[in-house]
Structures are given as structure tokens and as C-alpha cells.
Image (cartoon, rainbow, N blue to C red):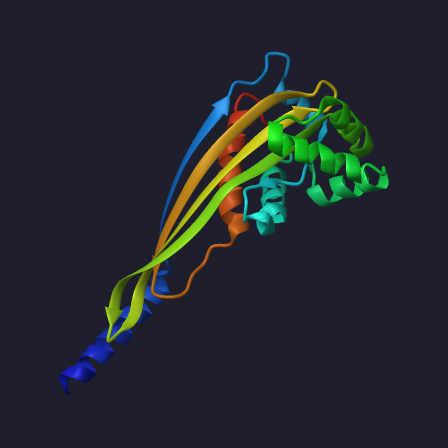
Length: 223
């Protein structure tokens, strides 16, 4: 058996074994929180439906707006005893049925510029969607990079994919126009594999949202 044949067999065995064990992943995250306002008790959310608004995203990330809000709804749905979330598509439907589309767009445009959801507009939105609280998610950055770590005869066999994500979340009281809780977080996911393997954006975002929401509900007893 020639040396070239041996190398081919070794490569085939390596690819087979690596394919069986799946990708190797490392996950890291860092989150910061602003203390809840003294007048706000997260336990009240157990008896409220809280709406998820359309995400505000950075330049060039507009295509991820729906996924950001959808992944937040998914993270909230995993806590059914603590909160009931109104998904973004239903919130937008109610806003449109209430003929507040232009006012909502103007409010969001002002928010991008000032960081403030106008109280008067927020009160109208809250009445239209029948919620006292809304989540305003934001996506600051999302980057993915790929590098080869092992090659055989010019074929890239082992690859490292690094995904970095930065998001923030605010909970607004639609009656008072106050931010009652907020958090921001950054996550990094690094994975090595012999195959083209990609974790969906929704899943990465959901994991980060879940960690951020831990702070909101940490003092609320689970029934």
C-alpha cells in the first residue's frame, strides 16, 4: 500500500470520526443590567400580556430586525409561568388596525435619534395593543468570521467559525413612559467542525436573551 493511499485512508477516518462527534463549540457571554425602578415589581408581569415591538437595528443589519424580535418572543415563551408575550407580528397588526402606523413609525424614528419612546405616542400604542408594558429590543452588531485550521492537499478540512452578537433590551411602561428595566449583552460563539456548520441566528440570539431575562425574573417565585 503506497503512502498516498495511507494518507487518503487516514483522512477518511479523520473526517468520519469528526463527523460522528459533531462540532466543538465554545460559548461566552457578558451582560450588564440597570437596576429596576423601585415602583416596578416584575411579579406583576405574571398577570399581564407584554408586547414585543419591532427591533431597532444598526446600519446594514436591517434584515435581522424580524429575527431579533422573534427570538426574544421565543425566549419569553420558555417562561410561561412568569410572563405571556404578545409577539411582534400581532403587536404590529393591532397598531395598524388602530390606524397608528405613521405615529408608530415616527415614534421609532425619534427613538433611534434620542433613545426615548415618546410618552404620548407610547400611551396610544399601549391602548391599541392592550398592554401596559412593551419590550423594545435592539441589535447593535452581528459579525461572523471563518478561518481554516487544517488543510489536506489544499482542501480546508477543519474550520473555525466565530460569531459575535451585541444586543440590548428595554422594558417600557406604556402608561408612564418610563423604562422600568433594561439590559445589554454580548455573546461570542466559536465552533470547530470539518463540515459547513452554522447555528441559526435565532438560536444564538435566543440564548443571549434568555440570560438577560434571568435578571428580570431572578426574584420572582416560580409557581
